[in-house]
Image (cartoon, rainbow, N blue to C red; front, side):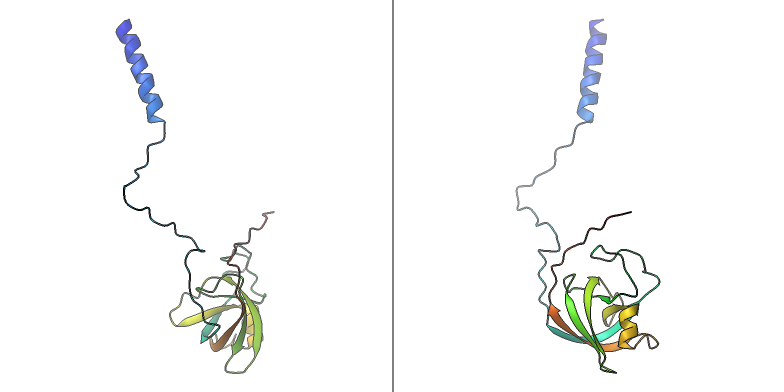
Length: 153
């Protein structure tokens, strides 16, 4: 009976130990720095020129990179690296129309493009029919790069 009791005791000990967290290896070298949006410093120019496109129905109602819901009729834009919530003046070089937009998303992901405007912005800038246009982007105020948490209904 004592062998059975010892066997049960060992089995219980093994089961308890197998449910605990495994120790994490901590090497003796320096720890890698954590990757976060705030630590990656990118030097931005105040004025840029390049090709802009627009995005519309495929993304309407979906979350943007800053956490708000994309409104294709709004006056917003996507840029690859400008801080989220940056305010910019975008001028269509072909017709000299300009708008003030807020960067709330990331993109465009097509080589050679600098900006992706919302459909509403592209409509007011006059390049919906053409699809793309050359733009001048002037930073009015750099954003806080904050993610906006919204309430789900």
